[in-house]
Image (tube, rainbow, N blue to C red; front, side, top):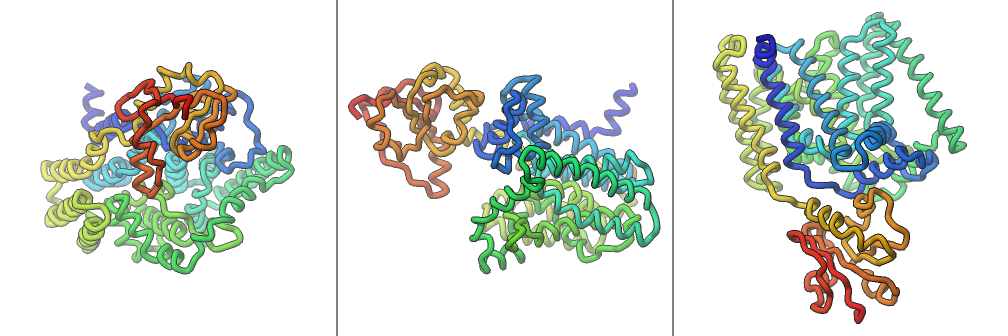
Length: 527
C-alpha cells in the first residue's frame, strides 16, 4: 500500500525515469569515434595503470569523466554497457536531484511542467547514452546549485559545494560559465552580512584543493598550469572564430538560432522572456533560479575561452546542457504567469518560423504545438487546477504527449551509423586482423577502429584512408577494405569526396562478408 501511495505521488518522476532508460537502450547507435572513444582510451589506460599525466592531449586531463569510467572498466570490462552506464546514471541522478528540488519548492502543476521540460528535453535525452563530460557536468552543477540555494554556515555544505564544482572542472572547463553567478551570490551575502562562515570555508577549501591540484601537475610535468597551457594551444589555430563576421553573428543572434535548431528553445523560451526582470532579491527561489540561468547564459554568450585572443566558445548544444534544468525551472514559472506566458507562446511561434526554413515542418510543427498548448491553458486561472485535479492532469498529460514526440521519433528511426553491423563484422572476422595487414576505410573508422580491438591493436595492423589505395599497393601485406555505406553517406552530406572505386568495388576483389550496408573485401593481389 505504501509503495502504491509513493508511486501515485511521484508518478511523473517514475514514468520519465523509465522513459529515459528505454530511450537510452533503443536509441543507442554506437559512437562518434572522436571525442567519446578518446575518453574511453584514456579510461582504459588508467584502468591498466599505463596512463601518463604528461600526455599532450586536453581530453586526457578531463579526469572527472575518465576516472569513473576507468572504475566501470575495472568492474564490467571495456564494453558498450560500461560506456552507456556512466552518462545514463548521471542523467538519472540529475532527474532525481531536480525532482527533489522542484517537488519541495513548487506547487502543482508548476513542478510537473518544470520536470517535463527538463526530463523530455531532446538533447538531455540524446546525450544520456553518449560518452561526453557535459552530461556528468550537468549533474554536478545541479548538485552544487542545490547546495548553494540551501547554504548555511556548515563546513560539510561548503566542502561538498567546492567538491562538486571541482569535479565539474575536472570534467570540462565550461563550468566557468556558472562561476559569475557564484560570485554574485557571494557578494550578495557579504552585503547582507549573512552566510559569512560558509564563504570563508568555501574559500579555504577551494584554495586547499586547487593548491593540491596544481602541485600534482608541478610534480609530474614541472608545470603547474600544464592543463591550461594545453587549452591555450588548442585555441591557437581557431582564427576563423575571431573574424569580425563570425564574432558579430556569435555575439548577437547565433546562440538564439542554435537554441531553435537544437530544440533547446522549448526549455529556454519562458526563461528568455524573464531575463529582463532579473531581481537582486536572491533569497526568493524564483529570483535565485532566474539569476543562475540569466547570468550563466550571459557568460556562455560572451565569455572568451582563449587567454590571448577574444574567442567565445563554439556553439554546440552539449556545451550548455547544464543550463537546461535551470531554464526548465524558470520557464515553468513563466508559463504560469501573465504576460510571460503570452511572450513565451509568441517566442515559440517565432521559433517555428525559423525552424520551418532550417529544419523543416516536423520541428516547426512541434514548436507550434507547444505555443498553442501554452495559450490554451493560459485561459484558465490557477484555482481551476486544484491539487492535480482533472484539468491539471490534462495539462500535464498533453504537454507530455507533445514533448515525447521528438524522442520517440528518434527511438524508432533505423540506424544512422551502422554501428551494430560494423561491430558484428569485427566480431566475426577479427582473426583476419590479428596479423600484419592494411585496412582501407573511412575517416570515422580510422579514428575509431581501436575500440573494436579494446584498444589493443595487433602490431603491424594499419588502418588507412580510402584515398591511400595507390600508396599502399606496393606494401607486401594482405589488404582489406571496410565499406560502411552509413558512414560514407554521412561524410557525403558534409562535402567529402570519395574515390570512384569506393562506390563500385572492382569485380576481382573478394567479398568476405556483408552485414546490411557494411561490407568487408580483400583486395586482389593484382591491384
